[in-house]
Structure formats: C-alpha cells, structure tokens
Length: 306
Image (cartoon, rainbow, N blue to C red; front, side, top):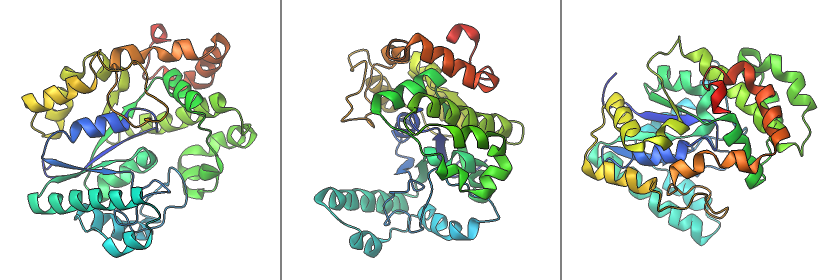
C-alpha cells in the first residue's frame, strides 16, 4: 500500500470515528475531511447528492458518486456550490475552514483523511476504487446503545430498507427485524444496527486483510501505544507532538462524559468513559442488547467484557 494513499476512518456512528480521525489528523501529513456521505454534508466538500444514511456504494451504482469523490480526493473545493447553500454565519465559517483544508491539502500534497461512519458498508469500494487504507472502529454494543439512548438519537431503518443492493448483499436476513422495530425503541434500534454493521465488518476481514479494525476500548485503555501502532500501520509519523496531542485528548483531567452540546468533542477521560454504559443502561437493557447482538459480538468481545 502506497504511503500517499487516502485514509478512510469508518465504523458505526458514535463508535469513536471522530476521535480516531482527529488523532490521525494530528500529523501534518494528513488533511481531515468530515463525513461526505452524511446526508447533510457540505456541497463545497462533496458535490453529489446523498439521499440515505449509510449509503451503499458498489460498481453497480458508483457513477453517481465516483466523480465527486475523485474531485474531493484531489482537493477540488466547490466554492460556488457552497456559497449557494449558505444559510447562517456558522455555514460561512465552515466554508472558510473547509476551503483552507482543501487549499492546504493540495499545496502540501497531504493525504486525504476521510472520517465517515456512514461509509462503513461501502468500505470495500473505497479500498478497491479509491485506493483507501481503511480503519474501522468498533465500540462495545452496550456503549454504542448507551450513547444513542443518552442523546435520544433514533434510527430510521427505512434508510437501509430502501437500498435494494444493500439489502441483497448484506441485510436481507434482517428485513423482518427492521420492519418490526418500534420508532421509539432506541435501545433495540441500536442493538440491531450494531449487529448488522459489525456482521458486515467481520465478513470483510478475510477478503480485505489490510483493513485495520480497532476497538474503541483498547485505544481508551492505552491511547499512546494504540495510536502509535495504528500510525505505523498507516505509514504515518508518530512524533512527540502527536503523542502529546493524543495524551491530552484522553487525559484523566478531561470530563468523564461529554456534554450533550459537544457530542463531537475529542477531549474526554477515555478510561472513565469506557464503562459509563453499565451505569446508564438498566440491567434488563443490557441483557436485551447482549441477546440481540451475541451472534456477532462474541467475534469482538469476550464474556467478561459484558
């Protein structure tokens, strides 16, 4: 794998993709670009329409997405498209930020680093078509469900059910579970979504042995060592400045839990945050999550981690 290849950091949302992406972007070799496959993405960054959360891209439908990704990875910023989409002062500030990232990335020949949880089902396409080195984050199903419960973030499975190729290739066996899931059952939705995503991730392991699959909990326990290993596997330079940034992001002096107003912050007491889900979820919820995910979770987590 060429050390100049783009990097994709993906995995379920609320699984540490922002933390991992930001920490990998601590090195000036990379240019951090956030969530082009978010349905609310900035048009200056990525000009194509994205209609569904967790959009599935393959050779069958790539014509809709490929040209825009080629432009993105070439650091071509669409200033006019972004200007027409501005709605607030915050949008204007984002324009300035993104334009600076793209300009610097192009001038310094940085490696594009895409942080996008919604690309997880499409990771093979990014590896094969975009030559991306892929990092996939995993968070314990209890921690994932707990985070979505705390934030009151439901998931509408119609975004998956209405993608025929995704259903055909990965999720048809889950159709009934998705169709029968209650709209107000965030814990159940989280467990089902986790199971489907990481069953797909596991299936890619043998086909794509170069994918780096990292557990959020392992990085939280020893961030410096964990990130040093990840840096080396990606051909990035891990120096003292990078180490200090990572240690500062995970220090015990940081809050043990993020404010709901700062859900994408990367400054957190990583060790203290690991077991918050055991306090936030009820015993019955933990049993339910384990039962719903056990056919996949045992591939990544042992019994004593419940």
